[in-house]
Image 1: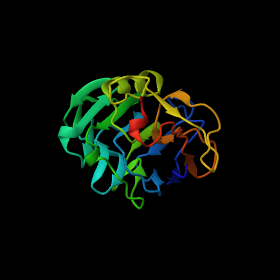
Image 2 (image 1 turned 60 degrees about the horizontal axis):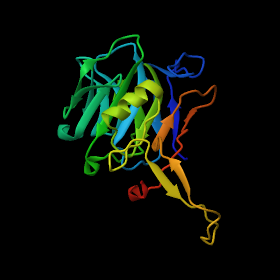
Image 3 (image 1 turned 60 degrees about the vertical axis):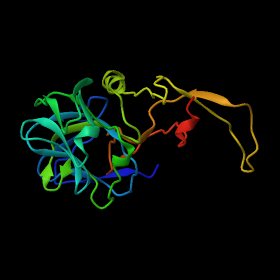
Length: 239
């Protein structure tokens, strides 16, 4: 995968060694720390992340372009901007806090790890990023103050059950178009000439993630994309 989040720092951005929800985390000072993703991403329909804010009011979290972004509102709720509210679902700690609204009902607490999921039900309103202004920990001149961990972007909408899965186990069970969790797909390994290398294999489809930032790095200026896309792009190959 080519998606890499580049660290842009003032002086205090911290990576591994800073206690995360899972292993390490990345800590932002709320002044000038942020990550940038310089590659274009298409069809983002949901996102998942752990956050431990040091300030919960009016702070930027994720920016996809100048018109589409996620932030903490002045009332300490998650606030998604740039997507029609009728297609939005927001979850905090696995709970369906509000559907068809741009703000979560649940408020975020200072100094505690909390899990957030944003899901967009209509593919026509999925997000395509602008690689010149895709940021984590920043929206415009508003910077996140606190820690983020296990940041995931998906190319399909997450259900309420999947939001709970991510909160409880950090893994989203794929749901196919028949509503079946733990969906499987069949694929055949072939050589360069397209000839079969064996019988069809059936796999359970999980975590079709566009981007997965574990935030566990120990050095350097980049946060690695650890996504492992298991699904074929053709959705009708799901059984």
